[in-house]
Image (tube, rainbow, N blue to C red):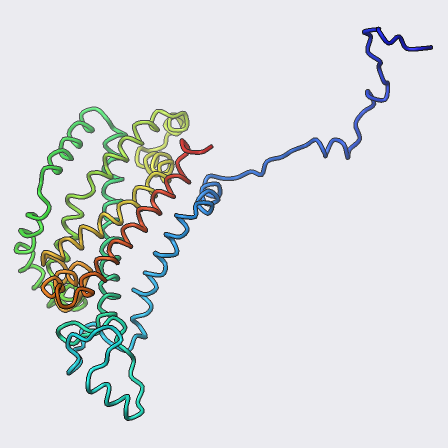
Length: 348
């Protein structure tokens, strides 16, 4: 039978209605790989070239600060006779005589300071101190701020009102003044503590640096507490919190296992951004003479010592200043990358 070219009837092929084969079924199935929160976040972080470059810079600085000094031929506190204020890669007269006699002398890569101490090792040790202070202070801020903010938000009501008014009062306390006062107040107790066995590290750090840690514990956690409080206020009415209460979970378990755990992404980002702020604060206080005890250096104290010879030896100031800027910039860029990777609101 001939088909009518002007007919609007569809020609039906019976073969189109046959059951699909197993191969055809598998070709139509498009499954997306199941990805968890952490795996998805790290995938997004790896794609961020600026954040990855920042990680490389931070790792290199940490390697030079914590590993290299263990086999570097000079000590940060050893004064080399006749090697005062040497330029980079320059030798003293005695060292040059040793070289002429066929001995091997390791060069002063960044020169020496006015007291004849190798400047490269002092910069590496100064970076170590600044990083340790930044990391320890941030850990103190994280623990105190997260617990305080979580408790205030979870219980709410008059508990939240009183706790947050305490935060407002703490905001008004000047940190530099408190550090100066603590330096005098802690001097006698710490001197007594240093005489006890096993507390020699107190003398190594010095009263000023311990005062900085105390101030971080007393003052700088308030921003972290406010951030955690805002997150917990949004999460505490969630269904899984209601279910945990119905199952008889205690308040401490709900805060620890359900609320703070679900804030972990935000806590990581905030902590990473707090590290450069802590390093800058320590460098600023060391620049004012309120940091580590002599002869232990930090980047701030190195810059303070070099400022008097700015016209003659400017590199002694520029090297720690550039390193402080590089550390702070790298941590800030890494924090931005972590925020972009772990913040669900920023996902495409």
